[in-house]
Structures are given as C-alpha cells and as structure tokens.
Image 1 (cartoon, one colour):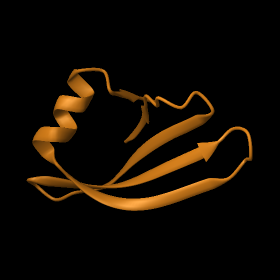
Image 2 (cartoon, one colour):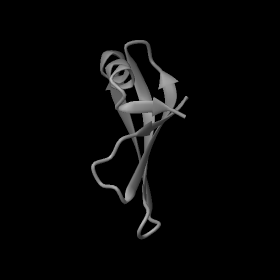
Image 3 (cartoon, one colour):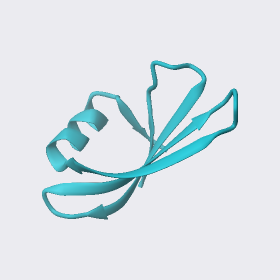
Image 4 (spheres, one colour):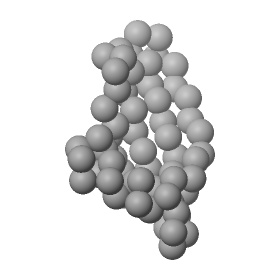
Length: 64
C-alpha cells in the first residue's frame, strides 16, 4: 500500500509505503523528495496500527 503525506514544506513530497503488517504495528518506508534539489531520502520506521489508521482516517495520509 502506498500513501502520500501532507508536508508543511511545499518543496518536499512525502510518501509512505507499507512494507509489513506486524499485527499491532506497521513497518513503513518513508520517502522524502526535495523538489528543489532532487535529493531523495528514505528511512524505515515502525508505527502503531492505531496511529496509522488515525492518520488515514483524518486525511493526513492519502492512499495513492
């Protein structure tokens, strides 16, 4: 599953890819692209199912 994340910095695009559903948590890959420099950074994070689902429900994360 892929999601876009709202960013307060208009020059950056943020994307979240769910790598694994671990039951109570998700392992996600966070990709940030700087539109000005073209620099792309990635990091793997763990987020609770409750927090992730709340972010989707509230529109902070939008399914791609």
